[in-house]
Length: 252
Ligand code: SF4
Image: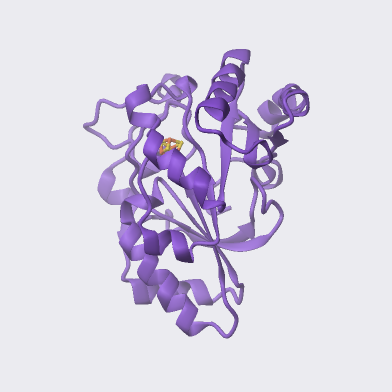
């Protein structure tokens, strides 16, 4: 599998508290996939896709010192059995598949889940964090326990036809296993979320508003406004616990 690579060359597999959504605060093993089919301008894991030689734009390009990444320095290959071994070292039964966009490597995650099912005494819990543009297979949907779907809004800089896939959102909404988590910072963002809730009949108890923030300071500035929107529209609020605890750091 193609995984995000830590500076020491190891794959980004780490033990931390789930920082967002329904399972916030749960100790989990995170496995971060390399590659994404989108290229959102505020992405906090741009090292999974913003390669040298591409024409993608990221907000951080205006910062002095920001450079696009060398692809070969950011990806590491591991077999599924190597990953099973790496994931087992934490003695934890909860796993989060994240990225990048993990659903690009859907068949491999399926094999990984099968491997962990066999290797562990108790049934493991599997969550995937996805942008909701890639259709999950029937077997994948049957085994995964929770999908944290984060459809992208106009604020991502992506074209609507790339970021909103109606058939995927409809299937995920019907599955009863998906939450929908939207990154919001403005009234326009909120309006788009409300339109999507209507269009795809998303259950409000499964819709999370999460502040657009790259730093704990930015989170502190926007959290109250977003919390009030959630209350006012009977939606859920999601914090970004990992950002508060550790800042914007890889492997947390
Ligand atoms: S979909 Fe997620 S990982 Fe991909 S570019 Fe957007 S924010 Fe980053």
